[in-house]
Picture 1 (tube, one colour):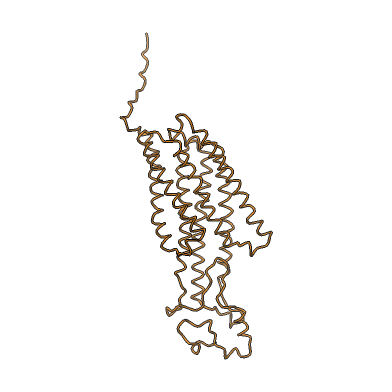
Picture 2 (spheres, rainbow, N blue to C red; picture 1 turned 180 degrees about the vertical axis):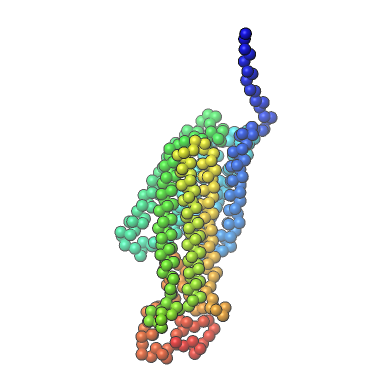
Length: 360
């Protein structure tokens, strides 16, 4: 008795210009992530220009921020074009695939460059010893050089691998090849080390400066009375806000880099890791932009006295420990002088008041 074999499953091809549902799912997710993330750059760019000054727009940090915004928008545009063609079952050119990969690599590198400039503002080599310079900038320089070499080798080898044949016409196959490349994993390890080290030394410096602002007083004054509670609170609040913004600016990218690295070594499906990679790139962009906007917008803030008047006693806006417009040594000399009782303490004088009303 002969047994009839089961008929083979036959899949009807989709109409021309359409694609299978299984192929549409990743393209739709890439399209949504890329479009939503790149769209957030537009209002942030408007805020960046609104709070900046003509002199500030000539600074390297501002120029890098503008370039990062342009690169993020270009990455979003290339992603929209590639995913739209993939959804319509149309081939994607090799050049656009390489351009998207290069932008995915270049965005984190530029973001870390902005972070390096911020580290430079709190660790100035002119104010450090040779050993401190080597301890701080030596590891950063070595990691960045190694990372740049690995990323260049990856782009060159991967471009050659997808340059011919039908591989360049399927964006999913192209992504799978990139995911399995060992150079990508090495670049992410170096990126994690770079971001983690820069985060640690920067946040340590901010935390140290924050602890030094718990009490601001004039040595020699009665009971170490605070110079100005309003000025102290203003500086402390600004530094505390900067601490948390910097923590978000650094910690979130580090966490995403660590997640991406875990997925790269444990996940065979590259789609989940690629979703995290795209989100991580835009988190890097948004983080450095928000930090720049905040630091620029603080120039509009002025410390106020309890009566609402602007105080003549102001702190300098820097990340170093508080320095004041008046020399503390001068105050000490006034307090120690025999005729200190007859000298008006003008450093405590609010704007618009006379020295006769505010004598020590």
